[in-house]
Amino acid sequence: MHDLTLAPVSGTTAATVVVVDDDPSHLELLTMTLESYRSATGERFAVMGFEDPAEALSRLPAEGPVVMICDNRFPLSTGLDWLPDFVRADMGPVILLTGTGSEEIAAEAFRQGASDYLTKSAVLDEPSLLHGAVTEALRRHQLVERNRELSRALKLANAELARKNERLARLTDAAHRFVDDVAHDFRTPLAVIQEFSSLVLDGIGGTLTSTQSEYVTFIHAATKDLAHLVDDFLDSSKLRAGVLGVDRHPVAVATIIDPVRHLIEARAAARAVSVEIAIDPDLPLVFADPEKARRVLVNLAVNGIKFTARNSRIRITARTGDAGGVCIGVADQGPGLSAAECRAIFERFRQGPASTQEGIKGFGLGLSIARELTHINLGALGVTSTPGAGSEFTFTLVANEPGEIVRRHLDHVATGAGPGAVAVLEVRAGDDDSAALRTFLTGACHPLDLVIEGVETGEMILVGATAEPDRWIERLRGMDDAPPFTATVVMTADPAEQRRDLEHAIRSRLPDVIRAPAESQDGGRHG
Image (cartoon, rainbow, N blue to C red; front, side, top):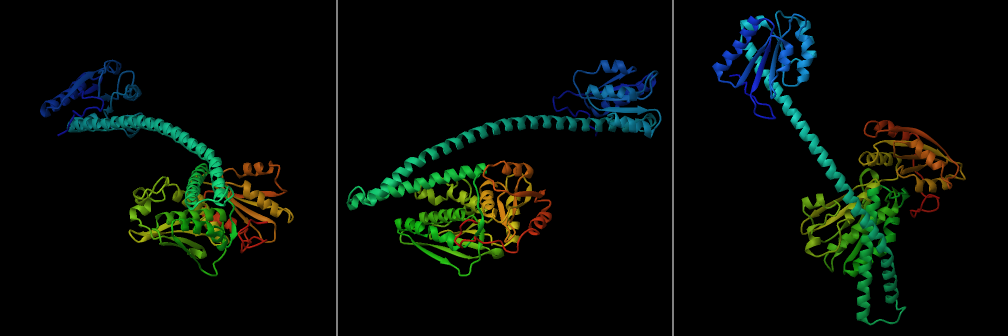
């Protein structure tokens, strides 16, 4: 049964079928056909008939939907002439009716917005065609109206969401600015407390009793913890703003671990935790910012010490990793993490359940920052854990091999939140100026943050995320302390779409082995 009571979305008003035909007999026949169908089916719709299209247009019902059935032949015009007016009235679908079939008329009717096209002969032979056309036209109209309403609702919801997001962004920025300001303001008094507590412990102000020494030691350790939290907040702010500088170059793994060994052992001794360090022999040089790598190591070690029971140990290892790189791990004997906790532990302000259960101080920033610093060093941070048996946190460092460095850097850019374009620049300086240029670029090239230096040529390849490398070069040349150099844009491309071309452009200009620091193997900068 055809249902002509399909109501518009905006209300429950029954449909009206308006028939327009200048032939009174045809008009009567069409209206009677529709009224007969209405009586037989009990459907709710009104039928109106007009011989003049202008009169029909002026007397359309105030509420719809309306189905217009319009003949194509009139004394001084055609139905096609009136179609635009009926469509603009936007009361409902329009069906064009002709005495004889014509593909040209049908095509033009559809172009002007008609929902259907029928011939009178077909309707007279089979009245159900008219019923079906009306039903289908109403169904389509209802879907169109429903889509319109949903579209309007979606636009309103999006506008409301945009307003809320804007307000949330303002509140978030205000909160970040407050935290940054507080962190900066804390640094000076914390430094004073640390310095003077250290002087007191050294006996500068006089000999302490054992109880006094114990108290001052607690003060000194607490200020160190608070200073570490302040550093976490400031690093988090720099990472969020994308202004944390980076200086990657070839470095030996031992020069990452050895400078912080004493610090880690001292922190562990304060909690009666021992530290075991095992570095595999013959590890390759890695391409990294050693200061960032040390921050990650200290972060993971301090985290492991916090959750390891007294008189237990943590174990720091360095071993060969994937693609010839190095994997540094910190294994603790803490309570361990579930699989779900392992997946969530690196999120900002996320702490494991042991933190709250044991009252351990922290804001859940340390591991998030460690992940970002590892990402900056073109590596990955991960964790394996067994509840009740401890955890091992590992981070990887890329080997000092040009092809792998390029691959990791393009991965780093492609997965970041930057401009989505990678620029490759060829920078040259004279032999006497190459060291100065390298030092200068290290400090000024962010976010063009991959600097690879040739062995003998005084040539450097810069790779980084930017969509405007020419403006970047102009900015470099405008700096007063820039040494003499020439720079050429090799190419700018999307790493997701032109990965192979980028790799070729970079690798074809690279030496086989990236030079280690000339003055030593201790992780110093190129000089």
